[in-house]
Amino acid sequence: MSDFRPTFRPALGAKTAITSAEVKLSALPEGAIVQVLAPPGEQDVASFLSGLGKGGVRTFSPGQWLIVGDEPMTQEDMKTLFETLEPRATGVDQSAGRARIRIDGKQAGRVLSKGTALDLSADAFPVGRSATTLIGHIAAHITRIDSDSFELIVLRGFAESLWDDLTRMSAEYR
Amino acid sequence: MASLVPCPHCGARPKEEFTVKGAAQVRPAPDTDKKSWVDYVYLRENPRGRYEEFWHHTSGCRRWLVVIRDTATHEIESSCDAAFAGQTDART
Image: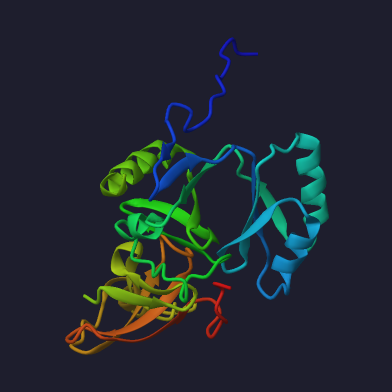
């Protein structure tokens, strides 16, 4: 066995949350993120996943979903979940691969609009809607979790960079 | 080039999210003659007007699309998923 031991630290551990009246930026707990892939033609997968009660279900792309939870999942739990998904879908553990950022406040939508071409108006992007898009040059997954709150899921290695971008994008509202 | 590309899964998105592969041609049968393969691999029409291309929604749904656009006016006539045409909206 190697002497090298990886140091576990949160992707955004070095960042301080931004709290102002107009916009708030915070790192969400690094719990569990499971990517679910279903074969074409499989029906009602989203409701099946919600029914499992393992966390929030986010649409990722056609035939793909993310299950996100604030609590980390043990290897045993993860294995059980993967077995429950079969044969309708296949799960991939993304908990260490992606980080979650939360942005709230009256100006949250405006901050994001500086980086993405996505229409974030309440009509086009209602609560619960998700989309994968670019924020600046970084690919990110946006979900509206409340009228003025968004959850961003980003590849872990890009999390700090996206955080810095969001800090700069929100500067005028602080 | 058109700046907004209609994705059948994601709606209108900026072209920066996409990667263009080129003409959407039908792949010849493996045992077909050499001329057809040379045509398929190297030769392109380059028309002024309607053109069918493969576009990959790299920073979005990551699906391969067939986009029909006009090379002169930049207008996009239609787009569909390369694998399953006419799939319903996946955003909900």
